[in-house]
Length: 178
Image 1: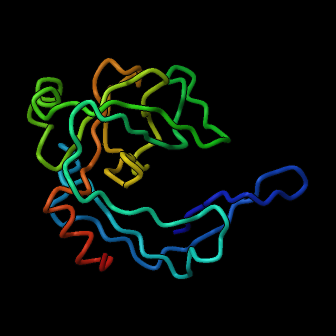
Image 2: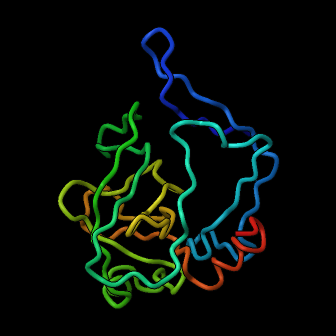
């Protein structure tokens, strides 16, 4: 398995991907693919991310993020669900955190304490192929894209695996040591 990460170098007017090969993929032991609960995994790579101009660590969220906080999600997913066109450029959307009660009202039993939910703010939503992408609040990695509305039009809030949830945080700590 390899991870394609596009950096800033260009060869013959095309962006070139740097390849990072996975040495191990660890899925949360309680992950449930039907409900998406415990939707977390760690990819260990054979080489290092150090020395690349546009790759840098981001601190993990260390506190609950209040409702109404403006955050952003990034990904390579569709920006038009109907056309399902893969994108050449990394996209992002600003989203507003909603309360766990609002998330539960929208998603019922799918909304567990392992998730943080956010709704479309003014410029988009997460969509297919954004899964696993970062959800960043106050310059800290707050979550990873897990699921959202079917047509990716912001009618339902998007759900992100919450890095600060104790069972997710302990998984990250036990595998990655951070």
